[in-house]
Each structure stands twice: as structure tokens, then as C-alpha cells.
Amino acid sequence: MKRLFFAALLCGLGASAGMACTNLIVTRGASADGSVMVTYAADSHQLYGELYYKPAADYPAGTMMQIHDWDTGKYLGEIPQVAHTYSVIGNMNEHQLVIGETTYGGREELMDTTGIIDYGSLIYITLQRARTAREAISVIDDLLQKYGYASEGESFTIADPNEVWIMEMIGKSTKLDRKGNNVNRGAVWVAKRIPDGSISAHANQARITTIDFNDPENCLYSKDVVKFAREYGLFQGKDSEFSFCDVYAPLDFSGARACEARVWSFFNRFSNGMDKYLDYAMGYDLENHMPLYVTPDHKITNKELADMMRDHYEGTPMDMTTDIGAGGSHLPYRWRPMGFEYEGKSYINERAIATQQTGWWFVAQCRADKPFGIFWFGVDDAATSPLTPYFSLSKRVHPAYEEGNGSLLEYSETSMYWLVSRIAQFSYLRYDKIGAEVRSVIDEWENSMMSAGLKSFDDLYAGAPEENKVWTLTSIALATSAVLFDKWQSLDKRLLVKYIDGNIKKQNPDGSFMNNGYDERIPASPIQEPYSDKWIENVVRDNGKVLQVPE
Image 1 (cartoon, helix red, strand yellow):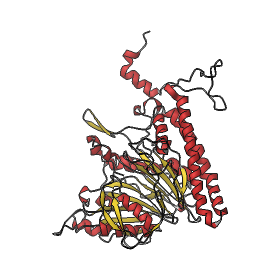
Image 2: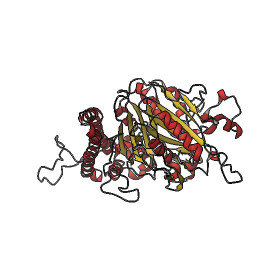
Image 3: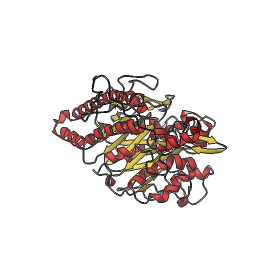
Image 4: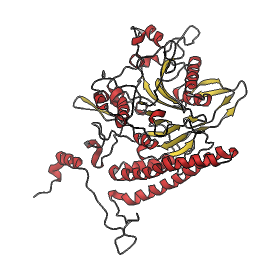
């Protein structure tokens, strides 16, 4: 998804400038259960929440595959299909290969207008053709060099059960020969393996600096990654001094504050000593560069990682719940545009990991000691969205998550996206109360699913006959999605009854609503809690002369 350009925000260039994603990475040695874990939030004001599924297939020689730009649907061209493709559920294939992304944009002049492989198509084509992370990097490079790269600068998370890589790339501009062919077709790129025991992340800003040219076990790169920069006039130093992100995506204030700050918040939650990079994350000292990866102070669970995707900078100087912008109920959201001006000075609102424009998100677990991976999937804003399990071997998607069940222009009563969105919109009205209650229901669900539930999935798979193992997993995913959909329908109705008109209905110890003691249909006098002290203070400062009661 698109990177947030500060100048564009101030100019109000619309939704296309407001797309952005977050990837969090936990290696095997840093996770509590020894799985590789990665997250992805597809954050776009134009992206609908649905779970993609592509079954494995065989194709006759000569079959062609049409390419449509993932963001816009625009037809880009076609490429030859391979003889066999792997099944893919969301962003995980049957071999537990996972790919996520964030767009950093980089130098606009390097965009290839002749390429036919956009970043979204690149992900899903690769998932259908590769078994491991290293093989995926090779497939990506082959596709780009043959057919050209049709997107902006991009960072990818590429993970399998044993290792995880960050791969960063950018196009090589458009330079046509006499026949109209682009002599700069392809892309320059670098990929680094995240050391076992470490955590990493990227969030719409290129992060890889120097390249380890003689360490193919941990660093891979396109053969012309430095040569092209020299020929294009972007770099003149020694190869050892070459920094991919500094050359192809120079950091500015917005790259730090709206992008790197999200990475910092993840590191800060799990690794000691990150205070020394706070000035970098806030955009005040761009020279104080934050490392690509850090060592966590404890092994991270799947639930902890899921909750990190719900972060709003709580407890940091960028905490979105504490200033007057949060209103009277500590709302950790700021509607777009993100930039504004006042008396000739420019300001921004924070861009946290959790954001209202998320279409869908996931926490993926690649497990080397198990025959299948877990693909925890959610739709809409992660902070008010529950995860439900699918599996690398799943063969079906529940109708509530299925492609085509509604869209951003078409409401569907049977869509989980619209149901979760209804609850999120209601939560934004009284976030400190409604949002907190929604979160408590999410926690109850996920704590069960991600611990005892996960063990039961493994046990059911192990106990199933060989011919039924895959369908056992598929049935679990469908049944669990159905239970969650029903649970969220009940929650939607209950929240409306409890919080209608800004009141809070009193409850009995069993959770039922209290009546007035005379008529069971009439509620007891409701709870009416005041707004926050900061909100009251600012209202009095702004309009106190009119609102003050005379003595």
C-alpha cells in the first residue's frame, strides 16, 4: 500500500496518498513456540476486507495468465502460466510460504511505465510458484527481469518455517529504444535474512542500508544494484559505502514520523534501550538511524504479536489517546487528511500501526515442526477486529470472508467485514467504553483460540485418517468462522442496546440489563459518565464564558 508523503498530505491529494501498511517479523528463536511469525495489515481506504483463496492447479503448455493491477484492477498484460501452481489461502501457500509488503515509494523517476508485474500480482504469482523464501526471491527476480516492474519502491516480508527475509526493490525507470522496448526493464533489489532470535519490521520506508556482497547465506541482491545507481547518477562512492535505502529512498521527516515510528513502537514494546532512537522515530534526528533488527527481551507469543497490531503508541510521547484530538473519550484515531496548517506552520497527526482504513490483516505462523501453518485472519481495523484461524492447507473460505460477498460500495448482511466495521464505527463514538468492551471480547476469543484452540487443531489433525486430514483442517476453519460471525452479530446488537444515545445501561452480575424494578421493559436509570478532564478543560477555555453557570 502507498507510502504517506507529507507534502501530499498537506495538499490534500486524496485517498491514494493515504494508503500504508505494516509488517512485523518474529524469527523462530524469538517466538515462544518456535514458529516464524509475520504480520501484515493491508491499509487502504479503497481495499475491501475479504480472504483470497486460490486452489492448486495444473495448466496445459501455452496457457497465458492475465495480469491486473492489484490496487486498481487495470489490465497490464499477460505472461505464460507454469505447469503447476500451489494452493494459496490469503498470503500463505500450502508449503507455509508467506509474503507481505509495504510500499515506500522511493524515487518517482525510477517508475517503469512499461512493466506489467505490479507488487500485488508479484506476491500472489510468487506464492503459487515457490516453496521456500529463497526460492520466492529467485522467482520474484525472474519475473521482474522478464516482464518489468509496474509499481513504486516496495519492501516485502518473505517467510517460510525456517527463515524470514526482507526484500526491498525499486524500478529502473523508462528508457525506450527505437523499437519502443524499455532498455531499463526489471528492478534493482536487495534482500537480507533476519538473524534467528531477532525481530524486525518495515512500515512504508525502505530500511536496508549496506549490502553484504560476499555473504549469500544472509544477503542476496540484483547484480546491477550498485552499477545502476552509478550510471543513473545516484551514487559515486565505494561499493562498501553503498546504502540501498539512502540511495533509492532517502529518508525525510514523514518517512520517520509516519513510517519508521511504527517500527520503533514495535521494537520499543519488546526490546530494552529503544529510548535512544525516539528522536529518530519522531523525525527530529534522521542521522540517529535505527537498526534493521533487534533482540527482544523475551520470547514473543502469537497473542502478543496480534496485540501489537492494535498499537496506537500508547505510553509514548506519540500516544494518540492523551491530547485534545482524542476528544472526550480518548479516541486514538485522527481522520484524514493527516497533515494540516495553522498560522503558517505545518502539523501532522500520528499514523499508528492500528488504523481505521485497514481492509484486512493477518498474523501468520510458519511451523517447521508441524505439517501446516496457521493463518490468523481479520478484517477492518485491527484494534476492534478478532482473528480467526485458517490453515496453509485450507481448501475453503467461509462465506462471511469469501471474495465477492459485498464491497466497499455494496453493504452485505452476511459479510464479516461489514459486521466488524459496524462495531468499529460505533466504538469510535465512545472509544474508552465501547472500544474497551469490544477489546475484552476479542481478548477472550483470541486467548482461547491461540492457546488451547491451537493445541486442539493439531490434535484433531493428528487423529484424523490420512485421507481426511486436509478436510479436517478446512472444517475447523469454516466452523470457527461461523461461530465467530454469530458471536459478532450478537455483540453488535448488544452494544447498540447498552450504549444507545450516549448512555450506559446498568448490568446485573450475570450480564443482563437491569430494569427499573417496576417494569421489566424499562431500564434502570443509566450511567452517564463525564468526558475526560482534558476535554472539559479545553471546552471551558474555548467557550467557558457562554457555558458558565452564573454564581
